[in-house]
Picture 1 (tube, rainbow, N blue to C red):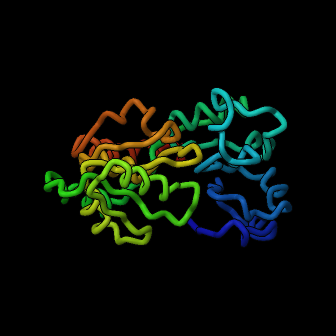
Picture 2 (picture 1 turned 90 degrees about the horizontal axis):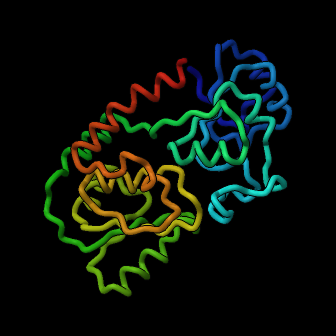
Length: 240
């Protein structure tokens, strides 16, 4: 399998591509001419957010349903073999807005190394009241998380966005709560899932789709094993 950034995915490249199916992640940089070329190809859109909306945030609309004039890229989604969503809630939002039947959902994929890191920090002492991520992106609202900690006089620690995963797990596992108030609808927040893998509770808002999933009640090793088992199911979606 060859991996190519979307802005390098030219019509010429696609014409010469002999893969049975093309998996498209972030298509923001995909040239318009390449989108036309894809009409003759079998492709899957692996959707990570809401690129079918002009503002990419369904949370501002009642029941997550945007007005029709806010929908974009409709034909690109319609012509795809499959649209793979990040969660069942994400799948529902896509279906409500695009009214398409080719949408499936899976769980984000964790490497075995990452799952081992999560396993290695089970049961360690909780020495912080809370932690939060120092995200680069304003919509992740790191300031809101810090302000919440200050208002509640929490003994807190912040985690830099580029922290090595094993160290990240150690800090997260050492905190009783993970604070997260995203400004846009999060399709499946990996850090929130990892917090629950480490028996750290989440204090957040209605923009965390993961909390609406039926399996969000799992904790610790039970959740880690669920993620491990979900990898095989995710592969089936892309292969079938």
